[in-house]
Image (cartoon, rainbow, N blue to C red; front, side):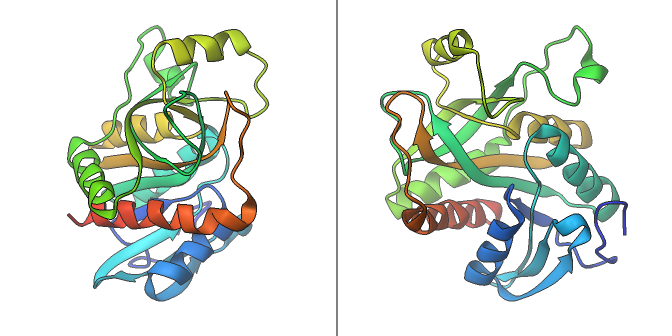
Length: 234
């Protein structure tokens, strides 16, 4: 039990999927896990543990933004011994070839800053995914026939961004999409020697303005969860 996670010893699996929204954690646990049980509800941040094809899995909310994710990922790694952490979440598309409903597998995650910046100071650390997870996720997506892109993303500190000039440079340099958590997740995984990956569904698009209607999100998010689970246990 930690300050932010009320789970007991043995309640958390070594493989954890991390959606930002705690209610998406509940939906994913109900939809994909067998015998899922609530293991955490401290501050309304829900976590569930069950099995997928006989493999223990925890699906735990991480909150919005890198500071929140940093808290949960650190405690899951340091206090519960989690070995594999896969972010499952939405993102905004930033390239013409990336469409709403597509899945992005984040090979790298650029950022202006992360909670770990105080450690690195002037050094610009390059956060990246675990290659084994990335390759397995790409294979799973191909098998499922899901339109998928592998490459760099941008982890932003702000949701309501007022830097169109920065967005232009991200697009110019091939950044596929923008979200708010992966760069810190990858940094923490590197620090503690764990595996991490971000599997992201494109829910809206910065160029076209298109957005995925809420009643169509469940199927698209379902593909993302299945890809993450296949990758974790490949």
